[in-house]
Amino acid sequence: MIPHLQTLANRLEALSEYSLATTEVMTRVLAAELGVKPGAWMGAARIALTGQPASPGMFDVMVLIGRKRTIQRLRRTMGNPLKYPGGTPHADIRASFPRGGYH
Image 1 (tube, rainbow, N blue to C red):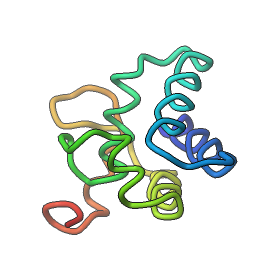
Image 2 (image 1 turned 180 degrees about the vertical axis):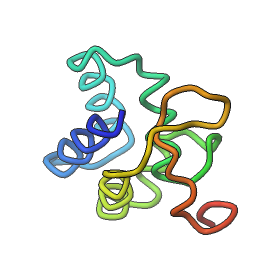
Image 3 (image 1 turned 90 degrees about the vertical axis):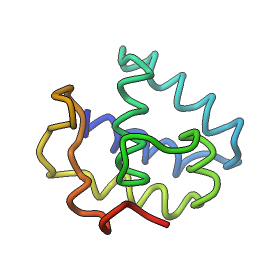
């Protein structure tokens, strides 16, 4: 899942317009291209962005924290072990976030 988050960061960086609509469309198209279930991928991205397995809508978070911070957080997942609370395969990157996630 982590290499896909790197690909997501690259695609977000290349968007000419960074908005709620463009981030959602691009993310869903990329998931289809990679053959990844959107829900699983978005769960990993949500943890990368917020440090939490549950959050407001992922695309809302992407827009609220901005392109630069979104890309930084997605890229920071590289090299972290694969693990997810509950045992499903996602990036367990929560340890690198402030306790309780970002506020």
